[in-house]
Image (cartoon, rainbow, N blue to C red; front, side):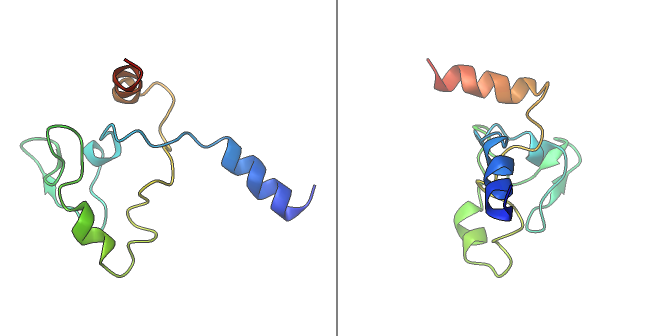
Length: 90
């Protein structure tokens, strides 16, 4: 297997991001801030979106942190993600 084929194989196993907000409730990215009262990033909206998304895209380093669109690294047993997928499929 070539390196290129191996990269494609890894990519095929990645779970797509569905914007469930799970990662933002675990810890903020380098641009976020923790809200101890809500136990999540203070920029996470009620509909589980990043309220500073457009601003982050203009910042140096946004390509790697946060990893918008890079895929979900917590796809297994993630009830928030499963709920969002059910909502999207309705």
